[in-house]
Image (cartoon, rainbow, N blue to C red; front, side, top):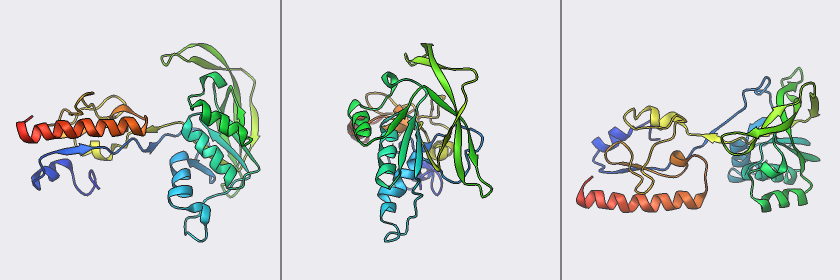
Length: 253
């Protein structure tokens, strides 16, 4: 693994002339709430990977166990959150709730994703934010406390900022929570490459046209540069970088 077993500088010393970094932004983001380490709380990355890629839905035919909650809560409102909610329903949940701190109008998932989720009886619990998780004596999730929100003035994203409603705490009973509030750049590779420029969020700074980074002979593209985006944008970045790398190998930096 580049960044752990071998560094980019070591690749150059082995005779490589150019390197493209397309590692994505796969470090799950959590909410840092009390009880978040209870058994039964997954990141969306792990939940979907174990279920689909590792075929957890076929356990025990495939040796990938996956918790099959009966009362499931998904935190977040993007496309990945909808995937997680619909997956939980397919795995046999009695109820699946999507908890989101803004209103439906601000939900970032595509309209068709929201429509399909509602068709499958996914419940949207809107203007609601989790504050803590509860567990039993064995450390297993039993529920979560939430706070009602109301929308205030727009924030930097242009969406109206959610404001807590004082005294509105309530509990949702659940035995499985999937946290789908985004991902960050994994620092494993960038920590071993100190001379590559990063944004304050830890993403690599790459030229928007060529993909060139601040380090000679290194290009980057996709989510590691842009943050979470689409596959088609990552593919386009790879093609643009390939052209730039060809120019470098034939004409120079």
